[in-house]
Image 1: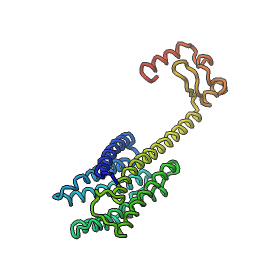
Image 2 (image 1 turned 30 degrees about the horizontal axis):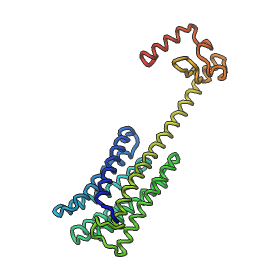
Image 3 (image 1 turned 180 degrees about the horizontal axis):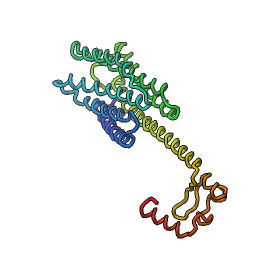
Image 4 (image 1 turned 180 degrees about the vertical axis):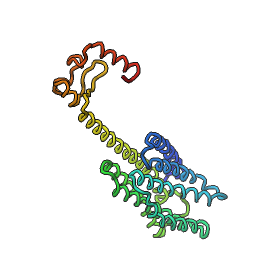
Length: 295
């Protein structure tokens, strides 16, 4: 394949930098929602992790680069898992992942400093990425609120695809596929980088949709609550256009007070139905609202 993996890595880094900006903005605007800060940490970790790939050609610092690279990428997927659980108002449940993470760290350090075997190291990395993705997909399928089912299911499927790719890599490694040079241009090496590029974009898209669906649901619920308060208030209340006083809505309190029906007042101005004893009173109110924003 005539594809330069280093070029893919640079594109990945730029993509993740854009995602950092997206999630930083979402975090600032929607701080009250738990989990978004963890999504931001995911995108930042991925920038560092994939950026570290570009320094693997320096032998003197290779072990340090390998640690940074893999720790950041795996930490990022853990952050994403925690963020989704928090977004669903669930406890972290990190204890369920802890045994796998512990085994991974021990195996990873053993394969790096004791035997220095990239084959074993790649097996551990692919395995833990698959496991975390499966945990995340399970969380999305099982704990999603009904109001965001479509977006949560979309994200869950992407996580399953992501897990499937690393399960496939794990099987290939166990089957004897050689892992000697991560920059060699073969499908085994290129596949996870393309996966990271496409999946990260789909995750960003899916997470933003999930957030927007939740916002829309809460906005609609707030509107329904306000409508209920408006309709059941014993006080006379009406909604009019400021420029011409045309009535858009009235509550039962006003109808009971005036004796009008709703059909008789909607679409007419307050002056037409004589709500003001003196028409100049309305203009005084309009002037105050234009000047101070309140009456």
